[in-house]
Image (tube, rainbow, N blue to C red; front, side, top):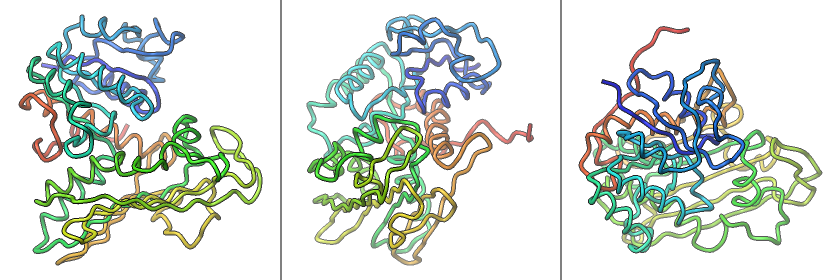
Length: 358
């Protein structure tokens, strides 16, 4: 029997999730929640960009979604700039006895040691009271920073360091809030964006790093951060607007998790808005962008992950992969014990199965 599922949020990730929820026979879509008034009343098929009429129209209140008595909610609403609100949404859903999988807020990937207990206590309490579970994951934080390193480490006799990299051109990334307000692209270099405020990188990626550390049997003692920024050599445009000359056009940051004085887990991001910027920084394995997992140990590994899609470029493919990781987790999360669940808690799961090409 198909699992009854609702979706919260129809932005970049939510639209992709909605496509799978409509077309995957394992799921029965019974509701869609939106925050934009103009989307209320529109059919889910239209919101997903599909040429189908589902009969499921978007609503603006989570209460209306809970009234459909779903087995699980897919939470794809913005979490970066509305952490408290997102935590509240998830607690409300869990308290109603509905399981949650989500792409946000990323800090729920492994909040212990990353957030003060009081910030996620309501989520834990709601999960216990509702007898439901929540699993937040994606691509970064997500499977490149936990599942792939775990798989590689399972073949090693010794692991000394794990380094996870994202190397990408974000010029086509369609998310102005993330690009301008969070990451600081197109902003003067004398302004410090949200992401580069002291401690924010360590919090944002700390959950994934601690999840990886826990799976490897160690505890991170300290997280440190470094970054470099590169100005635009001239005015140019990207998908979400203008990048003025002298404003931030490339960013490299590194977050290091220290264990007993050793840099055990490292996350490195290299983000460009033009391919010609900072050629001395690491290059992607494919045009546009890729991920890389490096393990120093016995044996050592350097594995490049190059997502692609028939429907979009590398940025679209990365979001698609992260969303797939979450949506395909639904059956496992519904079956899981109540509480905040991590990659280490869930069984190995796959997608909907092998399908002949269309």
